[in-house]
Image (tube, rainbow, N blue to C red):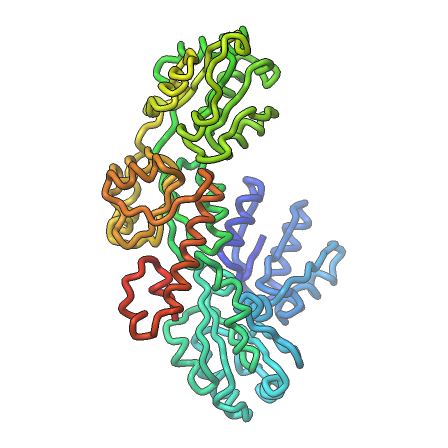
Length: 489
C-alpha cells in the first residue's frame, strides 16, 4: 500500500491493524508514473497493490494520470470512489452546500477559478480544502473576484478528527480568525455557514473534546473507550489493576468439582472477571455450560450478566433496583429447607472483595463458599506526563468502575485535580472516592459501563445548559466545573 500525505493517521492505523503481518506501507512519492511503477511491480509479483488517496481518486489530476499509466498495461485495476476532503469536512462542520455545488481539494491555489467561486457564493455555499498557509491568498482571490467582504466563512481544522474545530467569521476576517491553524483546512463560504449552530453535529456531541481518563485493565477498557469516542470524548486508558490467578488454586479446583457434583444451589457472580475465572477453570478440565445444569446463577449487575450470557447461560437473578451487593441481597430469597434441598452458595470473587455479600447470604440462612477466583494487583505507574496531567487537571473527567480503581489510581498516579469531573459506577465506588477526598459529580442509576458513560454525557449537557444561561461576563469567570466552560464560545 502506498498512501497520500493527506490520509489521516487514524485511518492508516486502522488499515495497519487489519493488514497481514508482512504487508508493506510507504508514502506515495514522485511523479504519477513513479507511483504507477511501484503498484505495477507489486501486482505483477502477486501482491494486492493499493493506493490510498485522500478524498475521491478522480478528484486529483495526479491520480488520474497514474490510473492512465496502469490502464496501458494488462494489469487489472479498480477505482473505488470516495468523498473529497472539502465535501466531507463541510458535512462534519454542519455546513450544507446547495445551489451550484463546488467542493474542491486544492494542492495549488493558483489553479482556483475565483470567478466560479464568487458565482457559487452568490447562489449558495462552496467548500475548498487548502493548506492553512494559503488562506491569505484565497482571501485576496475571493475579494478580487467581487465576493462581498461580509459573506460568512467557516474554517475547519483537523476535519473529522478528535480535535476538529471550526471558527466562523467573514471573507475579510477569516485569515485572522484562523490564526494558529496548521496543515490542511477546509474553507466553507456562503450564507449556509450561518446554519452551523443547528447542524454542527460532530462538534456539538456532549463530550466533544473532553479528555477522559479510563482507569481500567487493558482487556476491559475497549468497550468504554469506544462508547466515549461515540460521544466525542478523547479517552486515555490507564490500567490501574492487573488480574492474576489466585496464589493457591486448590479453592477453585474444589469449587469446580462441587459445581459438577451438585454441591451448590446458586453461583453468585459479582464481576466479569469472576465469570471469566470460572470459565477458564472449566476449560482447563474440558467442561462447558452443560455442567451448570441445575445450578442457579445470580449476577450483581447487567455487565456481569452479559458475560454469563456470552457462555450460553441465562442468569436467574439480576437486581432490578440498585446493582450492588445490597441490591442483590434485597432480592435474594432466604434459604428454605423444603424448597431448597441444597443450601450452599458459591461466591467466586476477588481477593480484596468486601464481606457484605457473604455476610448477607449467611444471614438469610445460606451456607457460603467464599472462594478467591482471582487476584487484583496494582498496575505499574503510568508515564510521568500522564501522572502530571492527572494531578494538574489535564483530564476533563475520570470514570471509576470499582473501589479498587479509585484506590489504585491514587496510589500509582496521585489524586485527580479538583476541576476534573468524577463519575462513578455505583454507591460503593462513590464511598471510596469520597474517602480519598474526591468530589463525586455523577453516578448512573444502573451500575453498568454504558450507563456510566451516559451519565457523564448527561452531566456535560447540564453544564452546557448552565453556561448558555449565564450572561457573557459571568460566563468568563464561571466556576462551573468541566471543560465545557473552557470551550464555550
